Image (cartoon, rainbow over all chains, first blue to last red; front, side, top):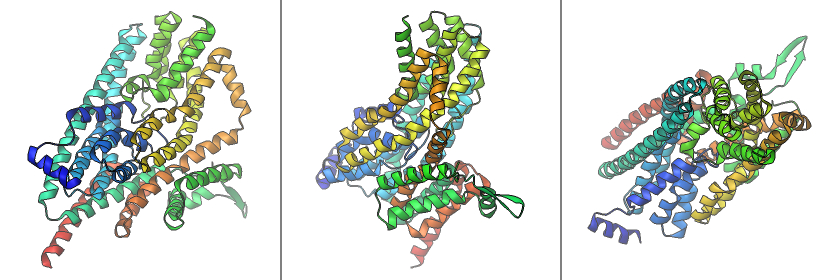
Length: 282
Length: 251
């Protein structure tokens, strides 16, 4: 199946995805990436729905398609405008993979993990610290004077910015993904490159864990006349000890106990409510 | 405009801006909620100058608000649209409106916490469809499944507040035990462990586990930015690649 496709594409020099497919993917992203925002996966579902039509087209085989969709359902979070670059690059790499080139799913997944943080960093600071502040500054000034141009300018300005930036980053991501894939094919050290990407991926995930999981105990007691606040004691041993513990518990349940994610979700709910009512967490 | 219709319209707009609107419009309509809300309510109430004044005053309070990783200290759709509308229907001054809006905005965090936590259920449903290779249902889950909880959380309190006045919301809040609200917030802090845990088990590789710890403790101890950590990771990765290639060559 894939061999046949590769031959066709090699002969025509054609790619599987048409410009129309790419435009639709970009539109799905910039419209609905954050429609099902949630604490568990943040933009996970948003990413999957954006790439879903591309996956359908690239992988007609049901099992391959299911595997690819599930892979793109994972935790994902970035800034929508600048992060569109990651989607573009992912689309290009998935296309290369469908065409039978030696791009592995490991490379694609690690690339997503490694890039989501930095692009969120760049995007958040440009979009919210620069663009938003400038546009709001001008618009509030006008609105205070009762000038309708205030909100109108703000609306138009930000919308044009969001559409333009995400369009440009999405398509440059797509081109870069294709370029990267060609280089990958040429280099002999694909194995060490995959490992290298995994390293960045791991270090970023570790950082995300410390930044995103929030657990604080409010337990305190009096021992020998002095008040002891448990959180302070824990912090003096090592900060973020409780978040690390919760993450370790989740991984233990997933890997060793083979529990479903639904089971773990319910467990976290029970823990959260029980320990709050016992005045342990707050 | 009829009082009931007005309440319905404001409640609808609040929900739509909070969770349903296309993302490229949310940058302006959500992050600038009070400013745009003042304009929209000005049109609805037939007094644009008043609306703009209230909106701009509330917006100034949120000028420095930055959503890092998607978290804002206030619910801007509620502060912006519901806040402005309540201020205008009570005929309050812009400054008095500011206190109404900021209070509502922090109450609104409860709505936000509720849907951000409960939408996990929709994601798990989408997981099932993804595992069946059903892309269309994945998209439908994102499009419509995602809106069930937000609609309940935003539309109903929004309508009640507009219909009965903001006291209605306060008495509604008084019925909910404070512990439940805290517990929802606590659970919201725990749930990212599942998303990140899932991700980590997919890319699991014992050899590279120490790198996850390095990333974790760099943030835990030094509170470093993710950008720095990614740069550091990239440098380590390049060094690793060179070392691996040298090992290959010497064989």
